[in-house]
Amino acid sequence: MKAVIPPRKSASLWKRASLGLSHRNEAVLVYKRLGWRLWKVWSGYLPRSLAETKMHCFKRLGEWVMARTFERHVVELHIRGWPC
Figure 1 (tube, rainbow, N blue to C red):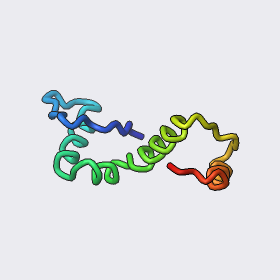
Figure 2: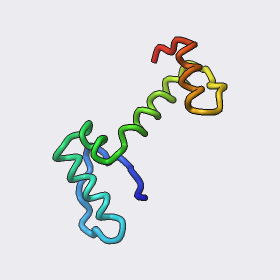
Figure 3: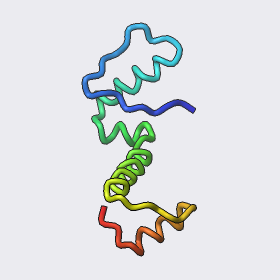
Figure 4: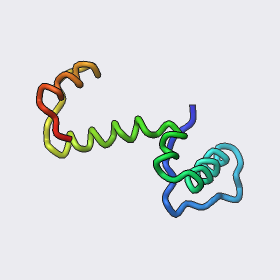
C-alpha cells in the first residue's frame, strides 16, 4: 500500500527518483497531464477527499456524530437534515 499525497500545484519532478520517490514523480506527471479532478480519481484520493471535506463541514458547525458505525452515521445525518 502506498501513500496517496496530492502534489502541490507548483510541484516539479525530483531528479534523484530512487526508492519511493518514483511514485511521487509519477503522481506529479499524471497530475500535470490530467488535472486535479482526474488525478483524484486515478490515484484513489477522491473518496478520501470527499470524506475529509464532509468532516470539515461537520466540525465547522460544531456538531458531533454520536453513532459508532458508518451506516448509523449516515442515518443520523439524514435525520438531522445535514446541509453540507
